Image 1: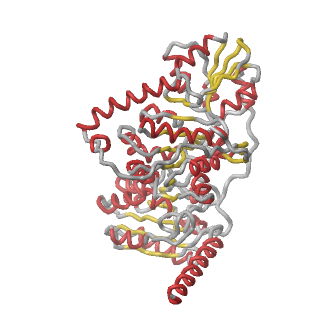
Image 2: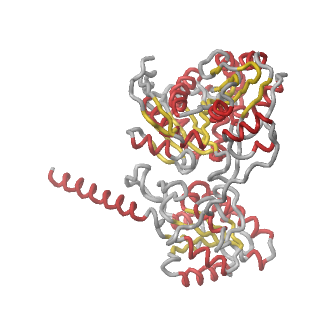
Image 3: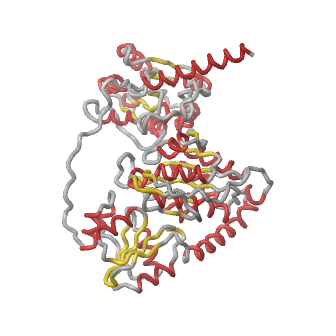
Length: 543
């Protein structure tokens, strides 16, 4: 392939977006979540078509529809988002896709901004789909292009697994726009290949296993994997960012850098292991690669258990190679996070704490209500769990405690997965009723102030339809629905909350005030929309 001479400095996220543009992706979709958020934002910025979905499951389902119609699609999410999208992912692997479908899993080892440290390499094995792992921005770009080719060749989803350092670190990228043109979308009926009832799913399972066998043979000689020759005394097997750490920590070692990490090229790996006296697997997170190689009878070493946690670094890799099990130096303590000064959530948590409420919390910047000086959140599990967890406590606690339970959820999180919790509340109401509090700050604040269906603006901040939370609550059968501004009238909010907690009824309170950081830009977006509308109206009158 001929490449352009242009040389760019891009983050891994930007590199993926640029590759998607060059691949002619018809639609990029996803849900914002660090460290993946910038992919779709940059795709939109450089002229691609991108949109936010209410959650990751919907995003993947939209992407599957694009693929069935013959279009190329990129779906982005952080590692815990794949949990939400897992239902369609596992069945999509059985179907025969048409347009290339690439799913970005942006993992967060070290939990820089996540509630767990799961290793999403497990998903490729469980869902029976291939996985690619780039080690820098150039590979993020190249692997994205190749992922679309693999997807279309084998009619299968492809997972591109990124991690925080790959997503955010900037390295040089030489783009290559000489790629296979995107197909023209067109629907062709294929009922056995797309309707996964048992009669069609059973043969589909055999087909997907055959596809993986074919991909295994391909991976034995693919250019996804690379051997860096070195000493025969020490060999290292690594993937992703661990490749870079290993090259710097032990430049003299022989290194097998795996780019397609499922299905594994076992013959290639076995030859490499036999070529060195000592071979160690350097991998962040779980011992997946090590366990797979040991299951094949290969004599490789694993990192000690203490290095399973958090991100690997060059010094940590040096310690692993040296077998150093001494306590690691403690990182310097940074300034703890806190709610912004002027944040509309502050009076809410002050009042919840003062009233000694039992708060079932959720994922968002308001999760910081658990920290001093508020100490006003008692649970936080996953997106949307505030409502279900609060209901569970209401059902079984003694009445005096049950009446103190409040579910607190953000606006973007409510759209993401709070709607079904509200349906549960209406369908199975606790004897003491329940109070759900939506903290509506008109943005997805924690991940960088992105839009969602409750803001009335699209990914590019253009006007679109807006979900009415109060109308949704009433439409679902909740009679006590209140819209308030706790910052404007904190005493009125406290009185309202006290009144609702005393009722044996279901209540929904929407606390509305824009995020203090987003408010200036929201005014700019609204002004631009108004000017655009006036220009459009003037043009219509002129004609």
